[in-house]
Amino acid sequence: MAWNLQNVYKKRNLVISPKQQSAFGTALIDADLTHRLEFDPGAYVALTRQYRSDRDKTGKGHDFPTYRVATDQDVAFSITLDVDDFLLGWIPAFLMGLVTDAGQASPYTHTIKFQQTTGNALATTIYSEDSDPLKRKFIDVGINVAEFSGSGRGVVQARLDMIGSGKATDGAIANMPALPTIKQLLASDAAFSIGNPGAATAIDPDRVLSWTVTLTQDITPFKGPGSVLYGTRLQIGHPSCKLAMTIAAKETDDLVTRFLGDTETEVQINIATAADCELDFLFPSIYLSAAQPATDTNDVVIQVESNEDSLIKKANTEIVQVTAKNNVPAYLVAGA
Image (cartoon, rainbow, N blue to C red; front, side, top):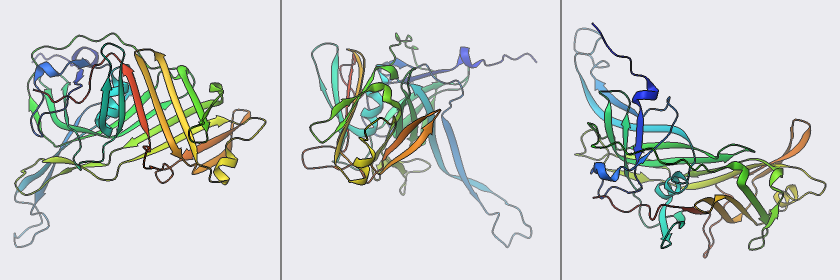
C-alpha cells in the first residue's frame, strides 16, 4: 500500500496571535491567528493523558487490570525561538500580563510589567500543523517560563515553557498566514549599564560575554470538580525573575565589591537592533547574589548572578520592567 512521508520542512507550521482569548476554553478564531513562526523542526506540542486502573486492587483473582479510565489530559510545549520584532513583545506580554501600549504609528512602544491584580494567567491559542492529518488548535495556552539569552554575535534567543488546559481541537485553519519579513533581535546590538539606582552608567559592551534573563510566571492548570479531563483556568503561583551575566574582569573591580558590600544596584540591558526592533530590560533595584571569578579561555571573568530573592520591588518600582518597540500596535487585545 502506497503512503507518503511527512517531511518536517514541507508539512510543519506554527501560528500564534497577539490576541488573548476572550474567555478561558474559547479558542481564538482563525482570523486572529496571524503570526506564522519559523521554528526548530524538533519542537512539538505534547498532548498527554493520565489514566487510572484497578491494577493494584485485589479481589479479581489475578494480578492484572480489568479496566482503565482517563483522568487528565494535559498540554505542554517547550521550544527555543530566535527572537524577532514580534516575539520580543509577545513573549513578555503573555508571561507578565500587564502591558501599556503607546504610539500612533510604528514604532509602537509596549511597557510590560508583572500584573499583580489576579491569580489567573492570560491564555491564548496556538495552531500547529505536524502532518497532513495532525492540524490542531491548542487552547488555553500560557507561558510559564521564558529565558532570554545572548552571547556575542548571533540572534537573541528565548527558551519557552508553555502549559495549556489540555484542550485541543482538530482541523486546519481557513488560511495559513504568509511568513512575515524576519527582523531578528541581534545580541551584538546589546548595551549594558550597571551602577547605583537612578545612576547606572554604561560599561564596555564587549566585556559582557553572555547574559540570561529568566522570567517565571509559575502557572499550573487548575482542575476542579466538573472539569472532566481539562483545566478550567491557569493558576498563577509565585512569579519571579533571575539575572545572570558573565562579564570580563578589568584593572579595577566594579562587581565583586558590589556583591560583598550588598550594594543596591541598577542594571539595564538595552538591545536596539532597529527603531522597530528593540527590547530593553530594566532592573531598578537589584542585589548580586553571586560574583564569582572564573576563567574564560585565557581571561578572568566574573560570573554575576541575581536570584529570586535579590530583585527588590519598592513602592515606586518593579522588580523588572520590559520595554518592547516594534510595528505591532497592541498585545493582549481580546479575540473575537
